[in-house]
Structures are given as C-alpha cells and as structure tokens.
Amino acid sequence: MADSPDTSAAELIGLVDSKIDMVRTRTLDLSFNELLDMYENGELEISPEYQRLFRWSEEKQSRFIESLILEMPIPPIYVIEMEEGVYELIDGLQRLSSYLRFRGALEVEDNEDQYLRLTDCDIVEGLNGYTYNDLPKALQIKLKRNFIRVEIIRKGSDQRLRYYMFKRLNTGGEMLSEQEIRNSTIRLLDNTFNDFIIRMSENPNFRTCIEFLTDEKKEKKYDQEYVLKFFAFKNYRDHYKKNITPFLTDYMEAVSYSQIDSQNDAIDFNYDKEGKVFIKTFAILNQALGENAFARVQNEKFVVSLTPTHFEAFTMGIQKYLEQLDETDEQQMKALGNLIKEIKSDKAFQRVAAGGGKNTANFLKQRIEFVEEKVGEWLNGTQ
Image (cartoon, rainbow, N blue to C red; front, side, top):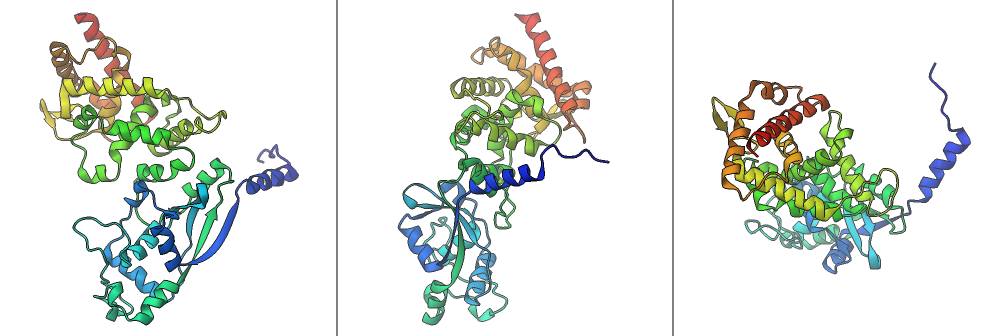
C-alpha cells in the first residue's frame, strides 16, 4: 500500500487556493478590428523575438480567415498586461498575425505581398484570389466585427505562476524548437540570461565552430541552444540525467529566477566571468580546428558535421586548462588541433561518443574525462 501524503486535505486545499489567488486574470471579448487598432497604436505588442515565429503557410492563413468569415468558433488568445496597460501577446500568434497580414498591417518579408491573397479555401472556394480590399463591404464588416476571447494575465500576478501558465499553453499548433519556446516564455520571469545567450551566439569564433549547423536549425535557434548547452554542462552538469530538453530548461529557469528572487532553486550567474570563459573557449577551438572543431573523423578525414557529443566533450574537456592554453600561440594551437583530431580518431573515444544510447550521464562523463586526460597529458609533456 502506498504511503499516505504528509499534507492533510485541508492544508492541500489551502495551498491550492493560495496559488490561485496569486494569478490575477481578466477576460474580454474584443473584435478583430479593436485588436488591429490596439496593435497599430502600440497598445498590443508582439515582441520581435516572438513575431519571428509566425510560420503559418498562406494556405493556413487563408483557411483561418475563411473560418472568421464563416463565424466558426476559434480558441482564445492570451496576453500579459505590461506597464501603462499595454498588452503583450503570448499565445495566439498564428491566428492574430494571420488577421493582421490579411488587413495589410503586419510587417512582411521583402518577397511577400503586404496583403494576403486568399488561397486554398476549401469550404467557400469562391473566396480564393481575394484580398481584404477586394472583398464585398459586407464581408469586410463581418471580419471587423468578429469577436475573439482575450484572456489577460494582470501585471499584479505572481511572476513564477504567470511563467508556468504560459509555458504550458498550446503555442498555436506549430512545431517550435525547444529553444524558440524558451526564448518566447522565459521573459515572463526575466530576459537577462536569454539576452546574454543571444549575444554570445553572435560571437565570431563560436559561429565558425558551429559552421556546419544547418540553416534550418539556425532558423530554429539551435545555435542559441548550443550556447545554453555550454553553460548548462559547465555549471549544472550534476543535474543531467539523460533527457537534454528538461535539463536545459531547468537550468535556464534557475538562472532567470536569480534575477527576481533568491529561492532555493535560483542559481547565481556571473555574466562578466562566464562571458570571458565562453569567449576564450571558442577562440581556442576556432584557432585549433575552426569549423571542424565538432566534426567527426572518418578514415583520418573530417566529415562535414556538427556532432553534439563532440561539442560536449571538447568544450568541457578543455575547461581545466584554459589558463594554460593561449589562442594567440600559433604553434600551440596547431598542436592542439592535431591532438583533438587524434582524439576524434581514437576508438576508445568513439565508443563513448558515437552511436546510439550515448546521451546518458555516464557516457557524458566518460567522454569529457577522456578529453581532459588527453589534453592534460599533452600539456604536461609540452609545457
């Protein structure tokens, strides 16, 4: 029989009620025309980072507009109340952006038309080919007056509960990467660490070392996730088990918590010190091997790739020796590059860094320690 909970029923109800009281909400039914006016007047904001996640195809945008014209029910959107009563959109990006695009109010890419032209409407096919300005006035008015429920999280709400609420929301059905979701939601706690990660991701040496990351993955912010991986494995590795996603999210949250309170799960982060370590690490790896820093070796030749296990092993494996390594010493960097290539070719290293099932904490520890040992032996023999 399972152990009985320590908390009594009355205590549990009290705990739940106390948390409910910490989230202040308000519900409004607003017309799309009101939302358009609020957006154009700066009363409703879509942050630049969040707006870049607008990915619905023109077909999906068109079918949403068709749904509005047909007065079909649609899910609510969620906003957070900022200073001076301004609302910031958090959930409902695809729906609201589709309407703004149809009205010609949304900033678009250079190769896109300002006004969405309906396509692939499958209920009223006669709508295909129309822009908003082409529609009969009666349908324009119908669109303007169509209402949507807006759930507002008031600015007096507890930051942590506000953050957790939005982290669990459906983000419109689009397949966002984990880092895109982190970027979009973490600012509800504090955006200092996230801004720092974005700045570090622009470091030229880092960009060269991840040169083989595909454009598609860069678009989905995997470059920023690699920066987060660096600091998480450097400072939080004891918490890693096997699944990288919750590990990275937990670390990002813990650092962000330190900006708003000092609860037990908050982690202090020295931005100046950590930034210098990051910059030197990738200056060394860039000078040693450049774009091949995290590439595999096969038949003594580099394979065009960015291998996550190599990223972990070599960024972490040289941390003990940063003071002994000098990125301006060409001879030392050339020798380090040759050593890293030898490690990549070593069968013992490949056993802990290649193949399936190597994402466990034990294998992570083994490959980092393998690099540490080899670099240490090399430095002790050459210094």
